[in-house]
Amino acid sequence: MRIIVRLPATVANLGPGFDTLALALDLWNEVEVDLEASPAVEVRGQGVGELPEDASNLVFRAMAHLAGEAGGALPPFALRCTNRIPLERGLGSSAAAVVGGLVAADRVLGLGLEPDRLLDVAVEIEGHADNVAACLRGGLVIAYLSSDGWRAERLDPHDDLRPVLVIPEHDRIATDAARRVLPRDVPLADAAFNAGRTALAVLALTRNLDVLPVALEDRLHQSRRLPLAPGSRAVFDQLRAAGVPVCVAGAGPSLLAFETGGVPVPEPGPSWRTLRLQVARNGADVRLEGH
Image 1 (cartoon, rainbow, N blue to C red):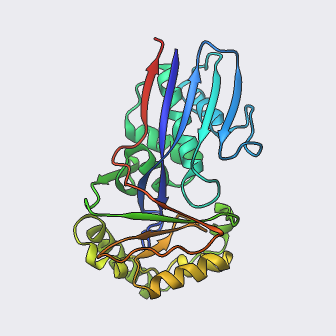
Image 2: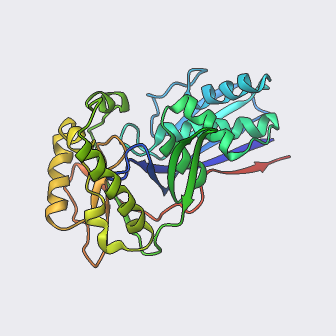
């Protein structure tokens, strides 16, 4: 039997929604677990020659983590990871690996875990709820920590939302490096500004696209992370000056822009890749073959 899990790319930290808002996009990784093949780990696509092809692979580690949590053991299997999400570009590649491993292991072990439990375990491994929540649920998500653990509310984005990923071909930013530049404390005025803009961003992304340029303004993280990638900062400033709604994608250095009101996102140049994608309305999905 083969278990095949598809995982969407995700963009978190949408403008002011630091660690809270995330959007799933129609760019998919695929995790395949073959229970009848000889044990092996194979990586295809993004990360070939860079991501490990042994038990230290993040997908494999997520599977082993869930097995340990459940008090069970994984049977022998071959793991194949087909990656289309670029690495270290702020597009949720590690979230997809974690969610893919957990969803696959849940099926292999026959656990039937509820989505909230999968979210909690994913956060234990990944450390950030917004990306993994969007990968699990699809659409636009609001992730939050409750007294019962991590939870997420899924919203349907506006039908006319037109996301555009602007991805540097050569620059990368590790999430840990992007976290280190953030302050431990922020002024009350900045916190209040972001609270208002986050509420406005939810409205903009679901009901009123006209306020997107204002709704994506932020005082907590973007101005501190953009200097890590000067090329991204220059393109960000150009898009803002052109009236294009834009924010840093996750921890960067990619940018997420939106084409609204007939204003196209201009091509930034030869060292950049521009992807016009649909919102992934559904999150991780599973199919079984040969059972």
